[in-house]
Amino acid sequence: MFSPEALEEIWSGCFNLAMTYAKDRVQDVALTLGPRLLKINKFDSAAEIFENCGFFDKAIEAYMRVQKWDRAFECAQQVRPMEMQQMYMKQITDAKKATLISGGKFGKIVESGDMSGLEMLSSRGQWEECLQLAEKQGGEVLNTYLMKFSKAHLEQGQYKETGRVLIRYNCPAIQQILPVYKTIAIEVLASDNSIELSVLRDMLSKLVENLE
Image (cartoon, rainbow, N blue to C red; front, side):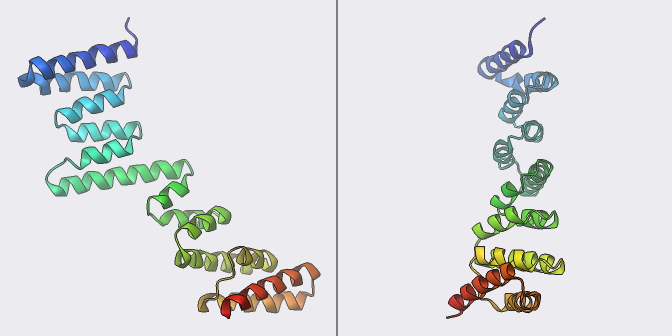
């Protein structure tokens, strides 16, 4: 009884022989050996065989099974016509995103240029990661999620916590967030809590610096 590794080596060797000495039958060989490799979970080898013979749909599926997203994209780029290529590109993108979501890797989604990862983090209340990632996307994106954060936390009466986060992100002096500062100031002054007043002082000091 051969091990999967031994079978992989034997079958890959058979395919290479066909590529060298029986090119007229290489597609038949690929359609025989590829499924055998898939059956023993040797997806990389199966994908390479399928790709070499132009069976791009089978190759893409095999690459996706082992999350070789870049290889799958490279394979899809060879597909014609363009309508089919775009269909496969979307299929790979959706599968990759679903895998990242199931693994909680929202940062990877954002790094790929898909801002829906920030929405997922904010909807789950994972604000620290959300704001850290938003900051890397630039001031406009950060301010959008600072507003979302502030709204959610002010509704819960977390004025001190909201102020501290705004300070951490340098209290942006933009029109949309000014009502947030006003609400924090009114509520903290009314509470007359020394810790909250200290946070308010630091927040307003930073805001005034940015307004100058």
